[in-house]
Length: 424
Image 1 (cartoon, rainbow, N blue to C red):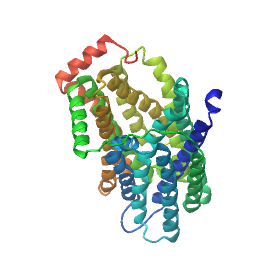
Image 2: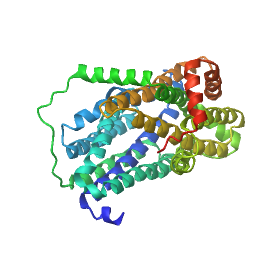
Image 3: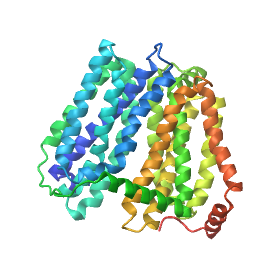
Image 4: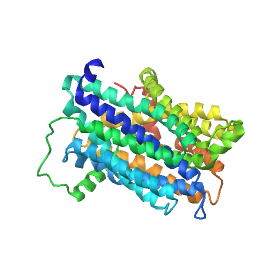
């Protein structure tokens, strides 16, 4: 690690990444706190939370799979600098709007543009690392970057919750602006030569055709389709659960636990324990994945997650919530890693990019759809009941899959009884 950190350009990129990610965490938590405290005649907290998640998630679906195409045609440093500058400026405008308490609906438009810019930052950072790091040190650089992402997530959400609880949303947004300023300043000192693709036209129809090919491949590969459809269902449940949880259920948990704590601080701790679970999940995969098949793990984790959520509905305990978040982090790493590894192993090189693009669309669209529907749904049923239904959905889906689609089940049982590990 010491050898990679003496690389001045990587050290600057790595530092900029830390401030950028911390800024993203502050921004998201500030928006959640703003929604929690936002009471108006237009609708409930859950309705506003759904709207927030929609504007955050829409660019992920529309631009996420295609951002890399554009990143390859523009200097990565330019993209990184523009991302920091634009997001810092938009957050400052958001601060002015929320402080003035005028035209607050325009905040969602700003959220939409911030999310658009974010879709370009991540692939630009990942593709910039090979430009500034020697080939023999690339693995260490990528590992450090990925590990930093998880560590910053663990601490930044908890810290963001504490900051917002102590000084409020408006002042937190000002701090958020400075994190992007620091990131911009740090990234601006990077000095690297970049080769940019020129003379290549981006055809929209071609992109959609490739996406269609990726979806078709997933559908006709039974083992991949087995995993991807479960990821799709899991992300739908996640969307319903998260909006219901952050809108009002979290306060019920705090009250039932007899803890004096603001909702946003509790959410910060919950997301931090989710991060701890992500780290633990990495070690869990190394120990367990070589002993059990991918399908055994998914068949075990899927209903178990559902049971934990159902118990949460009845228990409503803060410490149980942290335990559940920790386990959810482990399960998320295992299930998503299985999906990505399976696609990598089963997909030909010439199809891999479009298959992953299709997979990410399916993975993200489920969360966005569910998040949008949760708000209107709370006009019919309570948020707490949505939590219960989220857990029951995972359990019922796992049971139904035993009796439906015999052809798929035969294939799955064949793989299960083989007991082949998914990690080679």
